[in-house]
Amino acid sequence: MRIANPVITAWSAISPFGFGAEAFRTGLRAGVPAPTSAAEPAPDARGRLVPDFDARTVLGKKGTRSMDRVTALSVAAVGELAGPQDPPATPGAGPATGLVLGTSGSVRSTMDFTRSSIDGDRPFYVDPAQFPNTVMNCAAGQCAIWHGLKGPNATIAGGNAAGLLALNYARRLQAGGRAGTLLCGGAEEYSAARAWLRHHGGDGPDSAVLGDGLRRRTGRPGRSRRDGVRRAPGHRGDPLGPALLSAPGAGHGRSAPRGHRARRAG
Image 1 (cartoon, rainbow, N blue to C red):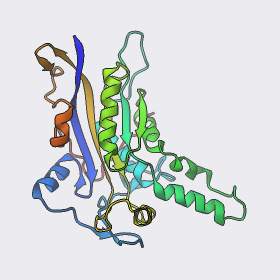
Image 2 (image 1 turned 30 degrees about the horizontal axis):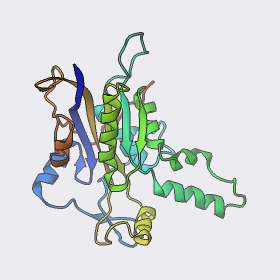
Image 3 (image 1 turned 135 degrees about the vertical axis):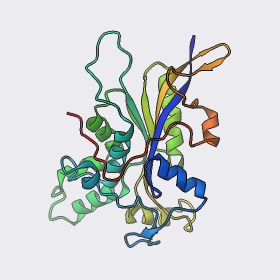
Image 4 (image 1 turned 60 degrees about the vertical axis):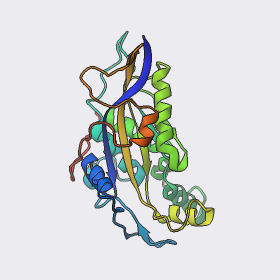
């Protein structure tokens, strides 16, 4: 018996259409672009932002004072799919739940931290609590801390394709026996810094409206016989393979109610 394509068992999204899988599904089926809202001063003042998203409201005050937007979006979305905190490892137990996140981090956090070093009286007069936000894998690391994910933790940067690259990376981890259940997806935040970077860097046509949001899936290894994939017992998820590229809504959605608080591990 060999390892087959993974099985998607759940998915959720936080997007300009709203919170949860159902809001995302409804928005796509309507065939109408997500509404734009006034954003920060930038080459294009429009932005497709997640409506009414505030880290302290959604996640609570503890541990969110220095959290940037992309990290907060990631932690909130993972909270919709992550189960109870993993128990301590035991001999012979399978791999713990892990996370693969497709993102380039926060452009705004990186630029703000650099600016504070240049504009300050001394280059080292900076807020050390803001430094973690400048690191690309900050969001993935915070997700693991908040939700007790003790398995593989990886961040994949790939621009517009980062979410799909994360799915492929997750598939490879499971195929190699290095991971069991994995949460994977892509995250992005809107900011004036990102808009200016796109404007000067030629990253896509200026007519494209930037936005932010996150989509996450839960994938578990499947097993196959010679006659094809056998689904994981108790799950009706779709195989995570090439067909996913043409069917991005596969799996079971769980809606994230507004005002939901993600509970920090420990």
